[in-house]
Amino acid sequence: MVSGLEPEVEAKLVRMVSTRKRIDFLDALHTFSAELQSIALPAAEVDKKQALKDNDREEVLLNGVQFIGRDELPHFRSAMKAVALSATMSDAQADAIVERVLRSTSRTASGADSYFVVDRLLVRGLGAIAEPYLLLKPRNTGMIPPVRIDMHAAVEGGGGAHSSTQQATVRCKISTANLYGLYRLEDIECFTQQSVGEPEPWIRLDTEVREEFSFGPLDAEGVQEQRTARVLSVQTPEPAPTVSEELEESF
Image 1: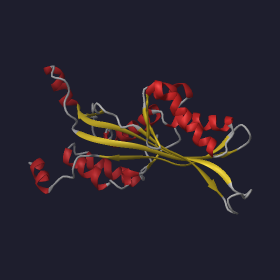
Image 2 (image 1 turned 90 degrees about the vertical axis):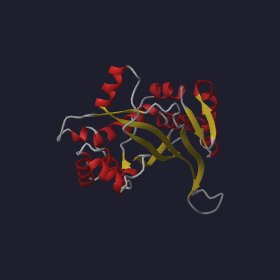
Image 3 (image 1 turned 180 degrees about the vertical axis):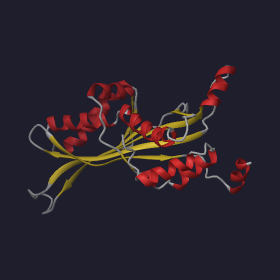
Image 4 (image 1 turned 135 degrees about the horizontal axis):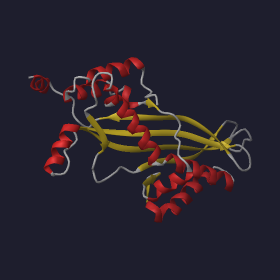
C-alpha cells in the first residue's frame, strides 16, 4: 500500500530515522509534522459482518452524543437514520446510508491502514539499510478514544427554500484514533527474560484516520456517495528534542 507521502519526503524521513537514535526519530516526526497530518488513504475495505462485530464493542460519539457497545447499537443506528430521514431520504435510502457509515466506523479498517502506513515509514522503511530492530504495536493506555461522527442533513443548490433545483444531502465526517508505540526489540527481550511485564514505548505515536463523504438520492431505493477525503495523520506527543538532548545522545 502506498503511504501517500511524496516520495522525496518519505525518502528524507527514512534517512533521518536510519541512525537508530531516538532523538532523530523525534526530529523527523517534528520536522515533517505538516506532511504527516494529511497522508492520503484509499477507500476503506471492510464488510458488513466485520463492521457489526467492531461496533458491538465500540464507543461512538455521534454529534456529541455517546453510544457504547452492543446494547446501544440500535439507538445509534436509529439516531443516524433520523439524520438521513431529515434530509427527505426514503426509508430504504436512510438504511443504506446507515450501513455505509457503520462500515466507516470499523476500527478494523482504520487500524489496519494506520498501522501499515506507520510501520512502512518508521520500521519497514529501514529494511534497505538494516534489519528491523523496532516493533510497532498498540499502546496499553487502558482507554481508546471513541470514534467521532459528525453527521448532518444539508440542502444544496439555489433558487430559494422550496426550489425544485435544491437537493437534500447527508454530510458525514468520521474520525478514528489509534494509539501506538514504537518498542525496541532488545527492550522487549530484556523485560521478557526478567518476567517484569513490558517496557514503556520507546516513542509514542498518535494516529487519526479522517474520512469525509456525502450522500444524495440516486433512485427511490439507493443513494449516491461522494467521498471527498480519507486521510491519516501521524504525530507524537513526545516534545521536540532540545540541543542539550541532542548533545547528550551523541556522546
